[in-house]
Amino acid sequence: MSEVLQQLAQILEQRKLESAEKSYVASLYAKGLDTILKKIGEEATETVIAAKGGDKKQIIYEMADLWFHCLVLLANEGLEPDDILQELQRRFGLSGLEEKAQRK
Image (cartoon, rainbow, N blue to C red; front, side, top):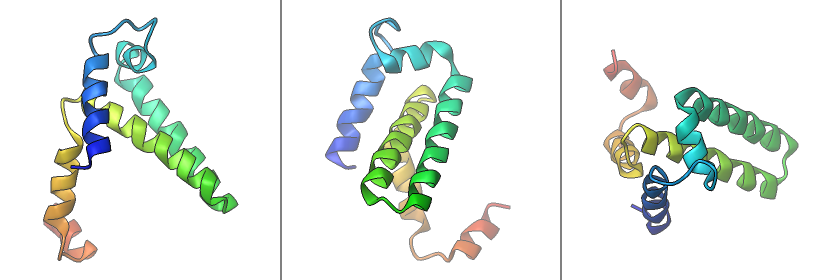
C-alpha cells in the first residue's frame, strides 16, 4: 500500500478516539454513516463539476477530497485502503464485462 494511504489510514483510525469538537474526522464519525455518505456524494459532485470545467488542478483538489472522504468511510466500516487495492489487483486481467458477470 502507498505510504501516504497507510499513514492516512492510521490517522483516520486514531481520530475515532478524539473529541468531535477538536477533529473534523472525529465529528464525521460522531455524526454517523449518513453524514459520511452525504460528504462523499458532495465531493463526487464537485469532482464531476471540476472535470466538466477542465481545470486539472481543480480536478486534483476535488478528487483528493473525494478520496479522503472515501477513506473515512472505509475506516468507519473497519476496512483499510489495502482491502480496496487487493480487490483491484484481483480484477487485473479481467475484462470489465467479465468481472461484472462474476458478481451475479
